[in-house]
Length: 391
Ligand code: SF4
Figure 1 (cartoon, rainbow, N blue to C red):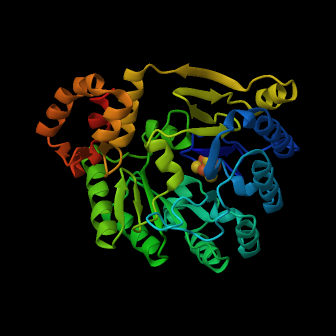
Figure 2: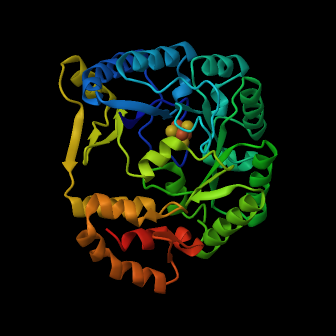
């Protein structure tokens, strides 16, 4: 059976963070419940397409999935199990590179301000075996600037409670490059994260999407964003601190203990097949991409009327698929496996990319060896430039 990943989007949050332009909002009365009904309808309608596939990873993301009662998330997971063939339900955290590598990974994103020990125990019992905590910073002044609903101490407590609840695969999200952030302040957050010994760390650079309160404060001149050199220095510092603490820098913004990369996200980077459910969720199957409508009301209306919830879809020709596959693969330290790509796309298509690979090698962004194209460290840092050469 072909491997498949499932993503479920929960578009609700307790409060909107100051930098956030994700599809999420504070729910109105009854909206959360109506959305769950709609989600079940979409799952039911689309599951028959997945015959012949085996679900290997599930990701509950958002928004904040944990604004739901844990029983509601458990019901959604049970509903998925009824409609899809799941690989054995790995209640144990099983790292890659072991005999359990292909066991089921079920991740849930959680906001530290929304979970306690009892919640996390129940989540674990529901089959979630990987927890991704949105910590963002271990400094309260930074958390206030970001508009987060939790303090640094609450984030640490949530991480400890996750361990007590039996999560052996814990990921922490941090955001680097806040206005005025110094290397010392950033490293303080990194060190506090390391003290909690997570299996995985995601370190994203702050972006300032137009329309967010943080971007508006920058426009008014109240805050000064970091310049490119300072942001690059933070990225290099992150690499140094985390690889020095025995984490693999396996993707541009992601670090893991050996054997603990996020397998769900590896599906995306390997250009594997996934189905996304819920508003704005993207899917990719048999070379075709689609994305769902963004509005919760429209989504619930369409599911109730038995209409498709797809807003846009496109089936890519092989040359575009190769470009995308390359762009995604070059986000990963392991890079692109040329033999596998030749067998999928053919020698002629691959030969067309060779001059660009040479150019990137000469620019110091790409390493060509062992039948692989791998980004150099500089190539990972300047990933937009490297990836852009292949699309
Ligand atoms: S918790 Fe996450 S999704 Fe929700 S508003 Fe904050 S950044 Fe956005």
